[in-house]
Amino acid sequence: MTPPTAAEIPPPPSRSLAQRAPDILVWGGVILLLMISFKPVEMGHLVRLFSNSENMRQYGQELLRPDFAQLPLFIAQMWLTVQIALWGTVLAVILAIPFGLACARNVSPVWLQQPMRLLMNLLRSIPDLVIGTLFIVAVGLGPFAGVMALALNTGGVLAKLFSEAVESIDKGPVEGVRATGATRLQEIVWGVIPQVAPLWTSYALYRFESNSRSATVLGLIGAGGIGQLLFETMNAFDYNQLSAIVIVIVLAVTMIDMLSQAMRSRLL
Amino acid sequence: MPAAAVLSIRNASRTFGLRRALDGVSLDVHKGEMIALIGPSGSGKSTLLRSISALQPIDGGDGRIQAFGSPVQENGRISGSVGEVRKRIGFIFQQFNLVGRLSLFSNVALGSLGRIDRLRGTLGLWPAETKAAVMAALARVGVADYAGQRANTLSGGQQQRGAIARALVQRAKIVLADEPVASLDPVSARRVMEILRELNRQDGLTVVVTLHQVDYALRYCDRVVALKAGKVVYDGDTEGLDRARLIDIYGPEFEDVFWEGAPQ
Image (tube, rainbow over all chains, first blue to last red; front, side, top):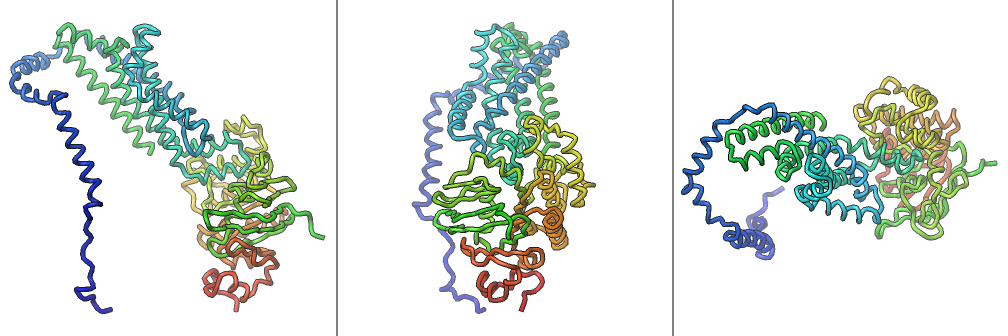
């Protein structure tokens, strides 16, 4: 083989303006959007972080002296928050299994799939704070409203994640089960569920982590737990206690994160 | 006098886009036969086999497939009672198609789904009869020691033997095997072919097997059906498959389809 002459070697590839146009459009659009939104979100106030630093310093000093006198109460309330997250997540999983299967393209018929997807989109798009407020009106202040808010919102999220896991399965084992003369339900139970079980469990654990955080926030609207206590303490300007509560929350949420991550890494 | 046809395929066609994978195939399979389905890649072997178990529909029109005298599919529609037919047809896949995270035992027990109580089958509450049948089938194909292991921890040959055990637990009268040895090493491949042959000889099962290697077709089967571009180009005794016929089916490179040298 003789080496090609200089004339035979093609030039390196270059992208024409037409090929680059989409890139330019996307990046230009993002920059334009940022410029338009600069004023409405008051980004100009960035300097106040420094001009008002004296306030920050005083606030910070009080926060540095946490008051743990009521620690048993904090822990009890934190535990309640975790319990809200636990029930919320479990109810969400119970919702998400049938709905997730009903949303999956490879399992469910079109007439069922489309309305189910719409319903799940709706559940997901309503923030849990809004659902929580609705339930507080319906069932009164307290943890149950928080549980219901988490269950519905997370149910919508998990249904989508579950259905995506189902859509990515290997269809071979399902055909293997089908070929034995199994019913549709048996195909799902034996062919689909074993394939998605690790991913589903992992998603559920991950949602339990993030629900422990959400449950804290739900306390702010009166759905019980440590969040409610946090809100009351904040309103009383008791920054020493506030600081102690925040420390309890951070420690508890970190512990749940670590525990759940350890469990998830064993699954996959 | 030949026994009644257990499988009857009439004028079956299947089109994928512009390509005709099956082009008016007609075939009768009689009880107790062991048939090799051969042909080059893309000749429609797998499509034909999968259509018989209605894992794939055939085109509309006058094409129809019957098993045990009951319709499997007609006019492009899969029969509503296909479940009843599938119960009596075991299907062996090239990729085994066991459920990887279930134990070999559970996988083989799935073979009984068609004949045990629906609720028990769905919940996995296997009756004692199923459990005994599973262990007997696993022992027969020689993998009983691995019953408790997850299927995806087993070798290809072990998994394929598990798949055959599943067909045994199913009490299948017909076994359709789609490239059962294409993913196996030669030793496992021979073992699997021998088991299929034994089921055919001793248990009187009807076996239809698609094969890439013509050696196996010649060694283990009595009748060979060759497909080329979706049409049946040979249907007859293994002995009739001489050099000229093979060149006709596979083209001049036909020697590639032998593992141990082509006949002269």
